[in-house]
Amino acid sequence: MWVGVLASECLSNFVRDANYIGRPYLSKTQERRTFLVTSFSQKGTMVVRRGRTWRRRRRRKDETRPVSLAHEESFVRFFQWLHRNGCRNVPLKPAVFPETGRGLMATKALKHEELILTIPKRLLITLDAIMDSYIAPYIERADPQLNPTQTLAAFLMCEKYRREKSFWRPYIDILPEEYSCPAFFTEDDFRLLPNSLRGRAKAKKYECHKEYKELTPFFKQLADLFPGQEDVFSFKDFKWAWSALKTRAFDVPIGLESCPHIRDTDTPTPTMFPLVDSINHSVKAKIRHRYNDKSRCLESRMGTVYRKHAEVMNSYGRADNDNLLLEFGFVVPGNPADTVTFNLVQDVLEYLQPENNELLERKIMFLAQNNLISDLTCGVTGVSPQLLIALMVFLCKHDDEDVWEDVRTGRFEEDGPLDAKARKIAGRLLSLRLRTYPTTTEEDKELLKEVTSPCGRLAVYCGMERKKLLENGLKMLQHSSKLAIAKGVLRKLFSR
Ligand SMILES: C[S@@+](CC[C@H](N)C(=O)[O-])C[C@H]1O[C@@H](n2cnc3c(N)ncnc32)[C@H](O)[C@@H]1O
Image 1: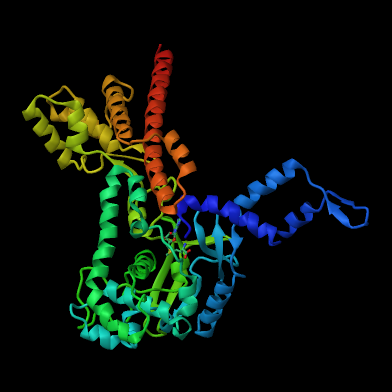
Image 2: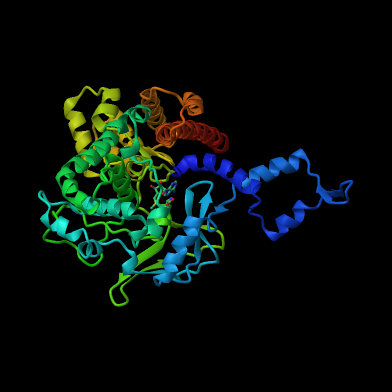
């Protein structure tokens, strides 16, 4: 399983291997350049001599270049299966990318609005397909009833076990064996997570256990389908199926939306979309998927252009790194959706310790009415304007709402005492938050030399990304105060 920031590490080994077995990913010009420095050996055969710099440059290039997986047997079978079943002319191929791991690469330039995928319904794993299969009578008799996720997970487990008898075998064969979502975390991995995330991650693992336990009576009945095979419904296999669903299925029911034999839940019934679920996430991606009722096909259309060999991306939603880790088991370095949130009472007021309760009440009311306490955060662009304005209003000595209104609308002296003090306190809040982490970024880097499990490394990276946000926010505050001083000096000089 490729894990966000971990992918680049794994790739460098992978690329080295690929070159070793003679499959370097070179363009024609690169190939030509490769053979520039040549000589002849005693036997008269051509020998290529290259220097250390060439090798270093070449290694660096290799590490940033995607590696095609299209020749791998499992993918060859998967694409043949797609073709046989009506999914043709796919302008995508599987590859490993340095930043994101395994994903799909454009095999040609893709145009805006181009229809790139047409996937017939029979290839999708839908509730319809399950209720039409050998497993349906068992689901109908199940007591207690299964929920949609349990239904899909049980079906996926059975299909995996049926091997060549399964229609979806070529698809199941390309699914990762292991995942890095919380269900796969060990106690040691959980310990490496930031404190604020540990409880939520453990709850996810607990949810997986709970769903499995609930299925025990169902699995006992289902054992009839696999006589003499006792390990079909182990927790390990359920965890695999459950994680495959959680990280790959789309909450879009196709055909049957519900069924009287399946327990209703708040969430829509998931569907597995082979191939579409091989596309990695980018919050900026613009690709639209739509089920065409007439042609009974899932259609994917480009919302933007892609050059040949670029990684085609899909947006899983504007999720911060905490949610990406909890739901999908990866984090995005420098994720634009990532923020560190400050609590009005526990962080801001605890630090400021304001005394006049009546005035405090009015200030909070003013801020709340102007929607200024809902985004007290630090993100990739630094501390939010709301946090700075809230701090300025709390620091304001004036009991006058007109003065607060001036602060709110930006009519205050930019490098004046109030602005400077608010920035200083924002910096203190960021530093205090940094101190709540048991390790520093430097210590994390050391830790990464020891931690080998993918989930543990992901947990460390998640904390590092958080700290990077705070450290960056601090730098920006310092930078902006220096900028303000410089601007002040210039103003004084020129106003003489
Ligand atoms: C729907 S699958 C995408 C295809 C998957 N990479 C594969 O190898 O089949 C979702 C999983 O891909 C990985 N992934 C998706 N987007 C990623 C990204 N931007 N960076 C790193 N990993 C990503 C995560 O492990 C996630 O659980």
